[in-house]
Image 1 (cartoon, rainbow, N blue to C red):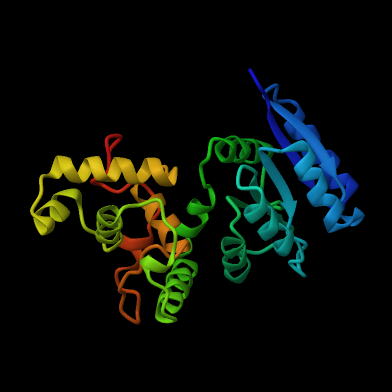
Image 2: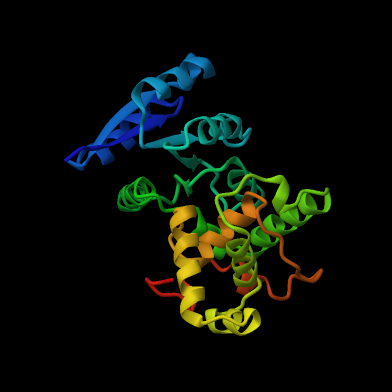
Amino acid sequence: MSKTIVMIIDDEPFFRAGVRQALSQQDSLEVLEFDPEEGEKTTIEQIAANSPDVVLLDIGYPTLRGLDLGRKIARGFPATKVVMLSANPNDDDEELFEVIKSGAAAYLRSKDCVPTELIETVRRTSRGEYPINDSVSSRPKVAWRVLRQFQDIAAMGMTIEDITTPLTSKEVQILTYIAEGNTNKRIASILGISEQTIKNHVSAILRKLNANDRAHAVFLALRNGWIAIEVDNNGKRLGDRIALGPHPDSSSSG
């Protein structure tokens, strides 16, 4: 059985050693270390050479200089998932918002992170999950800012036709209805087709986007600008539309 390759990118040798010790106890993980002080180009070269499944990246609090590198990793190496680590001692909505925009799969504040949480985050991320969804669902102000940014992008004239998407027009339509808080049954009624057909479409959407559930699919589609939704200025229905836990209507069959 192949091991999950984890690369630690942090300029503090003591911190890297501590994280390595915590992860190395797991037989399923192969842990690499790298000092970003050697330069961004060299860091990228190391990622290209080692193809890590997960990168644990220091955000560089309070300057947040790790965000730019995180963006480049997320865009240049889609098979490598980025977990942002922050030394910020406080909950910080602004920092979380910037991490979301970087494309990171997870965000952990190292001060409050215990080894078991770190290991579980690495495992979830390596399986293609997005633990950052948990952070967003508990921070409604951040969720509202994310939605507002997507609306601003849409207002600039970007449409579904302008973006290459793996979804069919029908799937985009259904995903938009899901984003607006509709159940499968309600969508079936609106479109005049069977509920099972809607479930089949939802299953296809989840498969194409590699999403964990309906809410994750909506999050990915919103982040990439594939769909836009209407909310009032107070974000009244924000909880329904951005909550990233399983939808009451969702199931393994979609």
